[in-house]
Image 1 (spheres, rainbow, N blue to C red):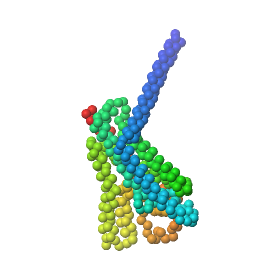
Image 2: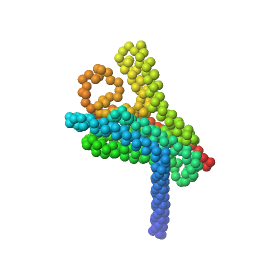
Image 3: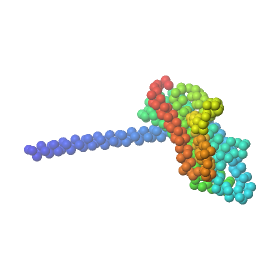
Image 4: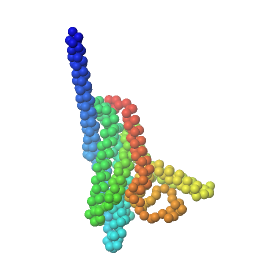
Length: 359
């Protein structure tokens, strides 16, 4: 009797455990299907946004303008360097150890700005053009509510738009960097050293971060404003302010602040100059210019205030790559932080917005 009861308990426990096992297995399969479906939905959003960007006349014209101006500045740089190299054999020997390849990005004969100047000027416009109507255009067309009716997480929409725009920028600037390398080798006949190549890769990464900041600012305004024209004008106003007017405002302030009769010592003068420099570094454009200058010009040994006593006894030699990276580390970190802050605010606002079928 006891053995029969024991057998019933064992059979019951076994079937109970089996049922739980089947339920857990079914739940795991459902979770796996949901995860796979969500990831495929995210990749579908990214692909759709990439296709929209690549077939948009606005982006085609802007990318063509960037390519045209960059190749124009590259041509003037190569012509200037080749003329200098053809002047004498001694110049060729000097050029081999003078980071000649990096000068393709910084040298100009005066007719056109350098490659770095063009990227610093047109890169923000590309970021703003990619992001200023990312959300409000979907809302005005009524497609955002239809998209939200699908079984996908809401943040996939804003994340997908950001990832697609960043991928487009990465492909564009990586292609530009490789084309510059190939043309430089063909025209100059001098291959880049490993250090020059590493500096060039860091420069391209820095360009991506800088453009991502303006892209996130455009996405933020597209979340805040319902009209695409309003968000575009707001983003352009911020860009104009930091590129043109902010430096003028700081210079006007510095003119009276640094020439004050109240300055009585060198330490006080250095402190005031550092304050003005700190104000300039609130601008993302200034941070980008400082970083690219130190990366592409190894002769730049400092970005701060240097007194005559500090330069006494210093060896006039270019900085190694690792020291240049350390020199621009605060500027690069500040740019990354500003980019993340812009995206976090846009993400938070978008997740809290009410989306109705009427738009």
